[in-house]
Length: 249
Image (tube, rainbow, N blue to C red; front, side, top):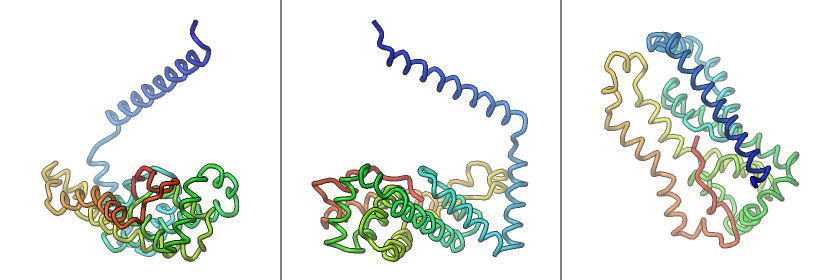
C-alpha cells in the first residue's frame, strides 16, 4: 500500500514540473516574438549613456541596487555585470561597498533580531567561530572572507558571535578586495553587446578574459588550501571548513 506521504510528494513534483513547463513555454514565446539582440544593444547603450551623463547618481543607484540584491543568497554573477557596465574601479568600489553594506545589515539583524534562532540553527559553526576568534582574532574573519566561505552564513553567524561590529565591518571590506578585483576584471574584459553583435562569439576569445575566469574559479580553493595548511580552517568540532563555497560576489 502506497504511503500518503509518497503520494503527496509525487503530486508536489508534478505540480513543480507543470509550473516549470509553463514558465518555459511563456519564456520561449516571449523570446520568439519580442526578444532581439538589436533591442538589447540599444538598451545597453542607453544605460551606458546614462552612467556617463550622471556618474554620481548612477553610482548611488547602482550601489543601492547591488546592496539590495546582495541580501538575497545565491545571486552570484552580479559583480561581473556591474564591472561590465561601470568599469573596473567604479565596479570594484560598488562591489565592495555593496557587499559590505549587505553584510552589515544581515549582521545586525542576526545580532538584534534573530540571535536565538541563529544560536540554535548554527550552534556548531558558532562554537567553532567563537573559538577561532578567541585564538586568532580578526585575522580569522579576514581568512573566511578571502577564502569565499558562504557570504550569508558568515554574516548571520558572526552577528550571533562575540565579534565587534567595527571589526566585522573592516575585515569584510578588506577581505573581499582580492576576489572582487578578479571578478571586476572579468567584467571589464567582456565585450559589449554591440561588439558581440558585430563580431559574434569570437569576441569572447580573449586570453586575459580566459585567464581571469580561470583565476576567479581557482582563487578561493587555492587560498583555502593554503589556509588549511597553515591550520587556520581546521576545526574538528565543526565550523566553516565544513561548509560549501558560496557562489561569490
